[in-house]
Amino acid sequence: MTTEIHRKPLGLGRLLAAVYTLFAVSAGARAIFQIATKFSHAPLAYTLSAVAALIYLLAAVCFNWPSAASWRTAVVALCIEFAGVVVVGTLSVVNSGWFPDASVWSDYGIGYGFVPVVLPIIGLLWLRRPETREAFGETEAETAAV
Amino acid sequence: MNAIAALAIFVFLMALSVWGLMLAVRRRPPDRSYLAAVVVGEVELVIQAIVALIVIIAGHRPPSLAEYLGYLFVTVAFLPYALVRARSPQANHWDSSVVAVVTFAVAVAVLRLLDLW
Image 1 (cartoon, rainbow over the protein chains, first blue to last red):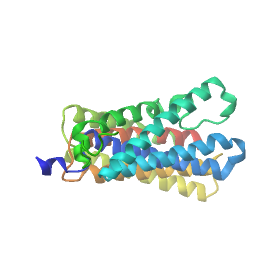
Image 2 (cartoon, rainbow over the protein chains, first blue to last red):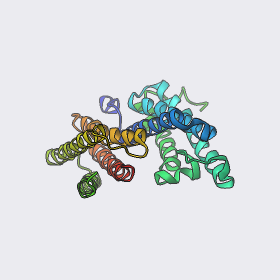
Image 3 (cartoon, chains in turn red, yellow):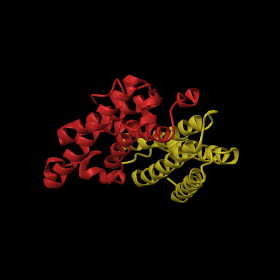
Image 4 (cartoon, helix red, strand yellow):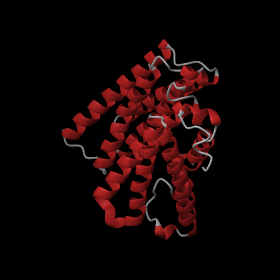
């Protein structure tokens, strides 16, 4: 069983790794394009696009290369991601003037079929499963505080 | 851009996505015939990209050239990524879902290309 468990990545993790890689590439390309061509038009929205892209990239790296450190990094990255979607989503609904041009997270990711708000929830639920922790080499004893 | 050709590629990619989803639901890894069909899809996308680049070099300017080229890159780069993963000996039914998601994303990108041309 041990060899079975340490095969990488596992189950739903394979899908998460692929989806986060896609989001890292597309959000990154979009952020570079926006910042390079029209940064002054909406500095806040475009800075957030870049931050979102970096978080997706970090999570993609963690899901593609499982280790105890990447498990912990992924948990932090997904928490920031979820907070980002909720805060930016709420602010963009309350006052759309703050975000004149859409970012990945505005309106809770409506431009991406709400995938941005669902993704971190699925990801965190998957990460906290004991099988997932074990596969990442993350033991219960080490994470008692988490 | 020839709208009918682009729409045909879109429909083909959506069919690939549904096929991948059916494999995933039946808990089957991507099989040889499915992978061959995905390769055909990638060939269509590469031809589309080459034709688009030739027309752009010849003088056509999409309103937002940088954005257009970004989406063009997405349409040719994503399927090989999914194929490499799906061909690994460890591939399981989750890789069928990966290919389904990627072909869907590329299908949407093809529509964006048509929009931005």
